[in-house]
Amino acid sequence: MNKSIKNSIIYNVYPTSFFDSNGDGVGDLKGIAEKLPHIKQFADIVWVNPFYKSPFRDGGYDIEDYYSIDERFGDMNDVKALIDRAHKLGLKIIFDLVVGHTSDQHKWFLESRKHEKNAYSDYYVWNDDVFGWMPGGSSISGNSERNGNYLINFFCFQPALNFGFRQKTLPWQNQYTDEACCKVHDEVINIIKYYLAMGLDGFRVDLANSIVKEDVGGECSCEVWRKIFGKVREEYPNAIFVSEWGEPMYAVKNGDFDIDFFTHCHNDGYNCLFRKESGSNVFASDGHSFFRKDGKGEAKTFFDFFKMNLEAVKDKGYVSIVTGNHDLPRISIGRDADDLKLVFSFILALPSVPLIYYGDEIGMPYSKIKSRDGGFIRTGSRTPMQWSADKNAGFSTTDGELYLPINENYKTVNVEAESKNPESLMNKVKELVATKREYAELFSCDSEFELISEEYPAVFKRSSNGKTLYCAFNPTEREYETSLPEGKIISSMKAKQEGEKVTLAPLSYIWIIA
Ligand code: NOJ
Image (tube, rainbow, N blue to C red):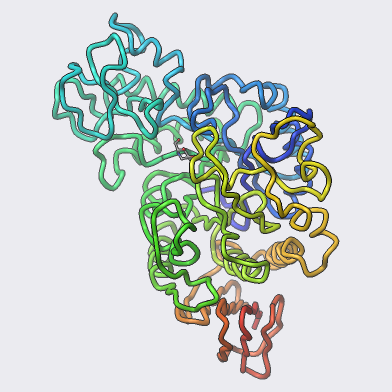
């Protein structure tokens, strides 16, 4: 367990859209390095989405070569320089590990699809008859000279690497412990070690629960990750692994991941906080979130799932609550700056290693634009970072086309303007982060968590070494009163305490140490 990250915040950078250092209209690695000081104000760990060589039919999650950098982003020297610069600034940096599948243009797959048996024939999950049935997920038929179908992991061009099945019931299947699968494990270990040797601090692991097929509960996938991490940690004991799983009680407890994200998948806990309204999620929904002015939401689903997971990961690792990511519509949909201040005050107060998606700290909007690079509904959350009111929002000097159009509100919603406005969302987020850092012991994942109210206003406490932090949140248009021990207010918005009486005006929160 990596205790050094217990009070960390992760900042997620989508590389095409953060900063364009060479004026070609697309963000790049040098651009990220240049803007690390901005990130440092909000976070301790930077996670960069994929920048490896790729046909980019799924935003780089379709990797053609794990050991080459896509030329739009730079080269391996830029990767090294980015890692070094992050470390000089005291930031940790992690990349994406996308090994549930490759691109169908990866050389392993181009070999695997051949009729002749070769060293890569078993690198992917094939059956032995193009007219035969294939359990384990979606499969592609008739797309190779080899007489078989292959499983995909996501889109049609992302063939699943062969981590095998939980149980071998058909002749062409491998059980997850078979030698063929161990060869794939070795490839994964090699990729991980290659970047760790360069100084990288760890990885966010894409679709971590998807690797072993027909594995309900993920026990066998967890066993494989334990084996892989065990081998890596012999050499790199502090390597950080963050899973895209959505159930820390499996990923962290059984799979030895350090952190697992709470997102929109597998459980409604996260959604009920922020993403129940239609258009606010990738999944169709038409409900009410807890963090909405109408006050019609519920947080029980969240707190039940959260508490259960906290208990499960104790002494093993951490949960991460996200403001968003490259797969979700922006959290700013239907929320103004004050609503978002409240969202941040809540996320940053929970015992988690929270994640800030680039631009959420300034309330960047979601753009209704057409899909690019397999983004579909997700494309609108991947628009260029709004740095200033200058040309191209300060993202790029190009006179040509940008990777994606800048959102039209960039003249007012941008880093420069918000840094000059003491009331801005960005300055509030900075203040919250600074307070979380100042009282690190109380805010760290190690401090005890106790829920006081899951109704409006939500109230919980955190305790460590005889000190207690009380946090209360009112995201609605109604005023509420509650009672909390009198103490020192370390952060608040539109809330006050007189004696034990706490008055929470509409859209308010308070953090008190008592
Ligand atoms: C999850 C990633 O976050 C998403 O962007 C990608 O499309 C799929 N995995 C497939 O790799």
